[in-house]
Length: 168
Image (cartoon, rainbow, N blue to C red; front, side, top):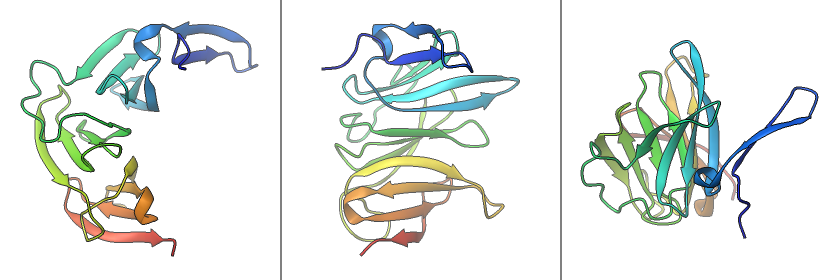
């Protein structure tokens, strides 16, 4: 069972401050991102099949899908991870469902979909997590392809670049 609150806020000393209620109880992944001069939270709500962007006070700032999203191939069934690129685009992985990766603009409009089930380049078997990897100087997506036991790099237009590491 899931708790009645998905996000719990503590002070730097570890003292409970507050929690965000039922809308956040289904978050499967959560990241803190900078948006302009402030920090916000973005998370994948696997059971609710959506992405939530929240203020640090719990205010709901954006959901995907929304009225601007458009049709999303494979839907949001099994959404497991989300990250935000340097230009504000939102990248979503559906590792418990279609094994597709979706790219949205900052308002939630679908820009591109890539991936799908398999073991080949640009295919995934449980693309479970995603993060932005800027260690090389050129931002890339680093995708955890869990059941294929590898980490995969994609460019920000969702093109396959390389297998970053593999566990055989």
